[in-house]
Length: 329
Ligand code: TRP
Image (cartoon, rainbow, N blue to C red; front, side):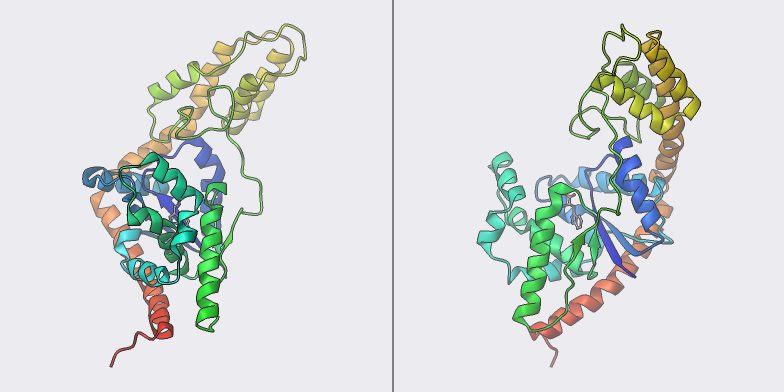
């Protein structure tokens, strides 16, 4: 069975785009492979060293993923810093990572541009720590977006280098995993492009009903069709794409006909869209809230996850130590 690993940013705030895209696939995938999901809190310290925010962020990220359907009885779900083996593996892998190749990483270049006053070793080491996350469980597959492909390429390079240098076949060459399907692209509410956290055009799974209504009513449209069966502008097509995802088919048909006959009232369309989005989001938001305030449950989940992750990690690190010649007298 494939071993799949995914790192979750602790700064995450899940939106509808995540929910109908990667997350859906994560939830399905847990049953088809041996899955590890972890909250990458060490990584967030490279740019956001704020103790109070860190802990709250981890709590929120974990609560959101659990509410959205990651099942701790099926997958191994843990917090990165609960598994100190990753720090040791990062240190050991770092012995064979060259400063030059790390300095050339696109993410490093971007971060030093944005954080000129805090160019720390953690930033430079970011891809090594990420390789350690992945190789810690000798994962075959890593579901990541385009922005992480270079990191995955480096992970493979470190794995190959280790295997070659020590003449072993210890680490796999972990591949990016795209679920074998095109991810559904959920558009934002601002007329163009996909929904994203930094774009400010999204509906978050933690949004209240009132926030959802307000955001949807303000979504960009156009001045309306004037000739029957005219093609939709991008902003209007985006509203229909969202409607198709959340509303029953007859509602989509109704508004499509209204559009084609130039009778459509965008206000009505948006009011309906908002209610259907609420129908999806409200139950998840309530779950998020229940989980977030359930310290006992969260404690159990992270302790159990850490225990399972550490078992897998300890095996890998023991092997690496042995290979590198770190042996007890
Ligand atoms: N760098 C990833 C991101 O920004 C998060 C991450 C950390 C990760 N370690 C990982 C992703 C290991 C996949 C595998 O999204």
